[in-house]
Image 1 (tube, rainbow, N blue to C red):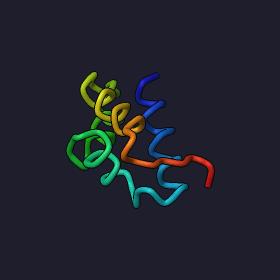
Image 2 (image 1 turned 45 degrees about the horizontal axis):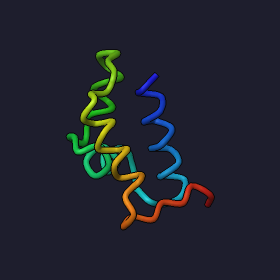
Image 3 (image 1 turned 90 degrees about the vertical axis):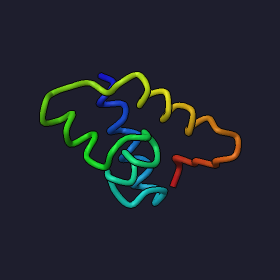
Length: 70
């Protein structure tokens, strides 16, 4: 379930041209390596709590303006 949430956020950010791709999302929005989500898909794993926390903090950061309505 958590992986689906991250993939949805990634897709929305890409649609709105906030990121260029999955590698940038993993690095800049999750604080992980560029292959993080690809690895989770390969091992059928779930994201770590710290990756979810970093992403949530970036989404609610008052200095970052993220608009999901493109």
